[in-house]
Image (cartoon, rainbow, N blue to C red; front, side, top):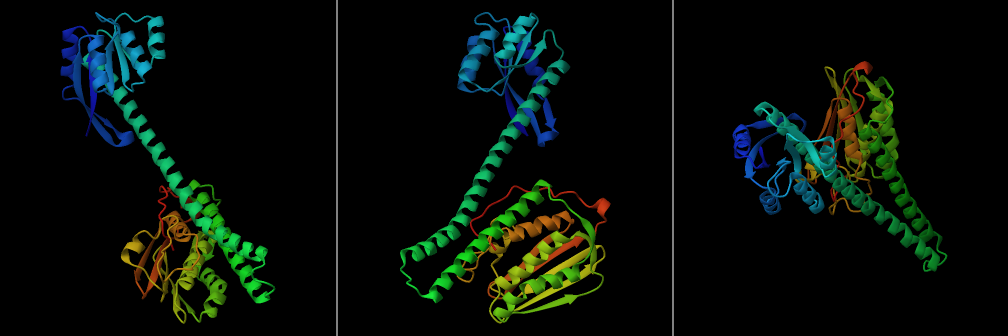
Length: 394
């Protein structure tokens, strides 16, 4: 429970003590921010005393009498406004005119409490002020977190794009300077490397677009009855040339009815990412097993490889945005670091989940479960988590 500091400035001792007594054991539940608050009450008899206390230790809430023996409540309010002190002020008075109310509001008064007031009226006003404070604080915190996440996201994106751009620029400078001569073999190697880098950047842009559409809920979904077994065969065919070039065997294992309500494009993204990673991070002469099965209304896709594997710490952060595992075994393997993050978000659209089991040097098994949900029950979008960019990724 959080404690809010509340200062009562009134020249009537009975009023000050009455407020302190009414709020002594009073607390407020604020469901909007999942928080409860209580109040630490301090007292001031004059405007001058109130200003001294506010300057030394600003309260979150100020109950300020309009008529005071020295400087008036409006004078206090104007000085707080000039000093830009963030204290929520509630004016308490029996003599407020429209002109006074307008003037006080312009100087930042939040609310008015007319004398005489009951303990219930006091508590209602204080409750309103506390809720306003806590919700505003939460909004500022979320805005700051959003700015920080955006900064991290852009920083990681810039870092990931800088490397391929620098590589292409370096190759082109070599060609321009004529240092390679007229050797066609070297020229072809340079062209191939440039094209590989450009293809990697194009995939990153495509992954970013997919990620943005999924998280914003703007991706149009066309739900139909799809055979996941057929989709798995197509994914394997797509990456068969890459596997054959490194003598990696791929085998598909299908059990039971594998049809489910799904968006064909989403299922294709999931299978392509899993099979692609299993080949890309595998060892030469390795093996990939793609297994599909059904358990009730859930379809399970498990892709096992005999690749480089990863540690438990590496696996724990694998499904975050821009995470790509970087070590001596993965150096030189290109990737956006977004593929598995997209797979996780798509699995959540199907009320499913994704997990990985892995051992360094022994390979990995990625398992995705998808719920077979009829179109009218299918969730329109996934509740997106704040991206958590990290320095490494798969």
